[in-house]
Image (cartoon, rainbow, N blue to C red):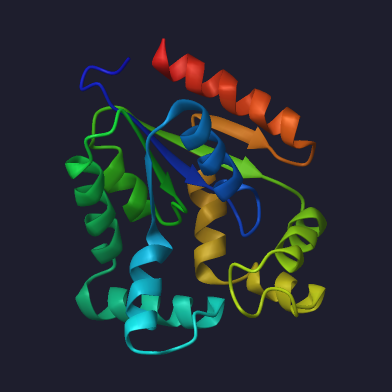
Length: 187
């Protein structure tokens, strides 16, 4: 395994590409802990009694980064990862170059990109209830969301991923790809 005995996986991918599915599978099969950038945002919105919609999460993220520095959330997650004692640490929702810059300084870090076509991702997002507005979203609104800053940055940082996972198939196909990269990084 890694010299510091930690395998740190940064999972990037557009909305509903399969980041949470991969994270949950790794934690169930191999153990470990996960961190999400959206958790700190959801905590703030919950505390101030504001609905946790995707738009509100993005507005809060923009406000915090413009007020306290573009790399604020990257620093917070990197510190959480450094303090974690688990052997496998998953950072779900890596979205910005600064996220990668901070995380790649930590020994054992690997960037993983997960992809799926837009129609597949739209079908997934309307079947889940991660955000209150997901189930009522139209394809046109979903398409428009793909042009937002965070989604564009995902495509940019995905080019530097060590592994790219195609999640257009079955769960079994996805899990096989995940097992391959986990074994690669732990042997």
